[in-house]
Structure formats: C-alpha cells, structure tokens
Length: 188
Image 1 (cartoon, rainbow, N blue to C red):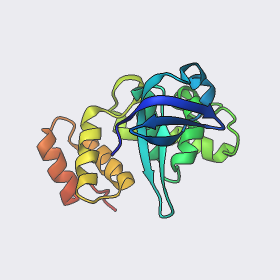
Image 2 (cartoon, one colour):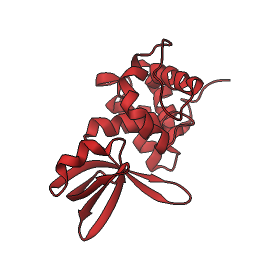
Image 3 (tube, rainbow, N blue to C red):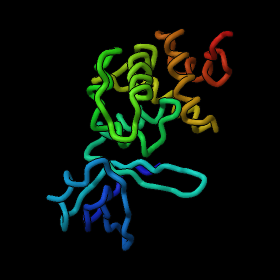
Image 4 (cartoon, rainbow, N blue to C red):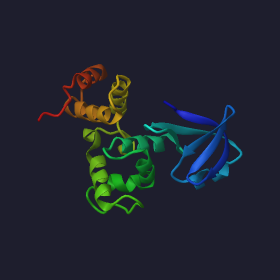
C-alpha cells in the first residue's frame, strides 16, 4: 500500500493536488483542494491511500493521518466506495454523532443512505473503538492480517468487528486465528 507521498506540491485545483515526486507528477484526489493552496511550490508529505478498481488505480491524499483513518473507516461500510467516502469526510463528526437524529445534507448522497451510514458508524467495531470513534488498533491489525491472506477488505473489517465483539479479551493471535477460521461469522 501507499503510506504517503512526499515531494513538491505543484498544483491544487479541481478536487486534486499534484505532487512532483521522483520525477513523476502524482495526482491525488482530495475532498477540499483549497486547504492545500498555501503549500503550492513547497515540499509536502501527504498521507495517501491507493484505491484499486477494475479500470484504474487512483491515489487519494489527506491533510493528516487521522483524516485517512476516517476515510478507510468509511470504506468499510457496504456500498461506500472511495469517491463516496471522500464526499463524506467533511461530515464525519456529524455522521458519528447522528445516532438516528438529523443527518447533514451531502450533495449526491440521499437521506436514506446518509442515515444508513450513520447507523453503520454507530455500531461499527462492536463498540470497540479507539479515540474519536476510529477503529481500535486491534481491529485494524486483525483486518490487515486478513487482507494479507486474500480476504476482501470489507469482509476483513466485518470479521474483525465480529471476533472482537465475541472475544474482547483474547490475545491478538487468537483473534486472527478465529477470524481466519470463520468462527467469527454470524450464526444464522
């Protein structure tokens, strides 16, 4: 995976920033390019996420690692792809705090989908979260191990959440073993 992009910021316009790194101009999609305008012409190091799709690879850039963590948490929601997660980033706090109440308007995302996303975030990780509602380090470690074994990221995050919910005090190795074996799957 791509952890960060380091180089000279060349341009910030149209929802993207371009960073010159190693003789390449890397285009990163961002949710608000105006935040990066003051860095044009200067060296930057931006947390990044590389999204794979059948038709292309696309880099996403973030102002800090916390913003990237929120983005990846949104990617764990069924039906939310990278473009939608990027649109949702500015509303993160409101979505997490929604608890079935009023969910903010977001261009291109209807009220039913916003409410579903807010509900998903409220129950995500079986209540086991790190600071500010982010997935716990254990959940990220388990999901990362599962992805490394070829399990799809969404399924890996779901299995990590289920195994942590059922066995919150188990050691990490045991949690990974249970998630891989499928004992974390929902019973019918």
